[in-house]
Image: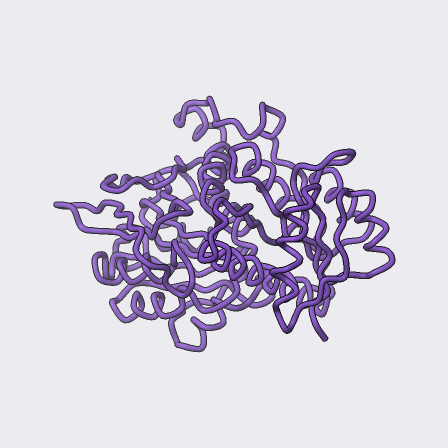
Length: 373
């Protein structure tokens, strides 16, 4: 059965473009297009689509309000289509908290090559959303909306104005105590994720106290969205979260998130390590790619690294996690039950790359246990 897709966007040009991209796929079918949320609501009732692509900014009822109502009354797989602006990226991150599964930016160029690349990314995310929803339904799990974090009461996703020291004191009482480290000293932690990863990463980081080794993260996410994601995490976590910059030295208690436009890798710099960014060709169809980060960790940090592969579709990160394990690093994969999509971790387990396979709720504590904090 083809994946039945409903497209909701107030722009006639975007509706036509998205419909054309989807209709070209042999495993997909466009069941309709809607110019606003009210029309989409009726089409969902009548056409019963598998996946909804939903514009963030629309007249009458914006995408977030519609999504919030939809996920409470008629939950389904949703892919958000957003302008690549700060406002659009912040709204899209809130959409993920409300239950959307994927984010796709609107195309910035209309050349044949650019549109082909955009189309490939769009249909990949539609497939990932459909797979995630189907597997959740089979397991009887309901992807219900999550409440907005407390900091959301401040101006839209603003950077936290609380000093890191004060924030640490406020958060520290609920953080797990750090037991004595086990074996090899951990110099840095490396995390990779894709579909479902924004919420998984947030859950892991919320379980970590200040003083952790530096953490480098690759989350498959469009350009412009990673800056907002880093700001959101920074306002929620005890750790200092930022977008990585090339040449930036790794420091304890800091988290470095790969920008959506570049591969992120680690390089030795004197007695420590630093971030390196590259706009080289995509790896495993992704830039940033988890394998790029993990392979650099294996080569540069070796046994001092700790690797974690979280939820996501495909195989990105599996080979890199195996390289890390072969280099002496400790490696963890998220388990099937807690994954939104058990793709990347499954490939890692099949390769023998993971020394531990853990539910998401236990990964933060496992990192604390492995590290000298």
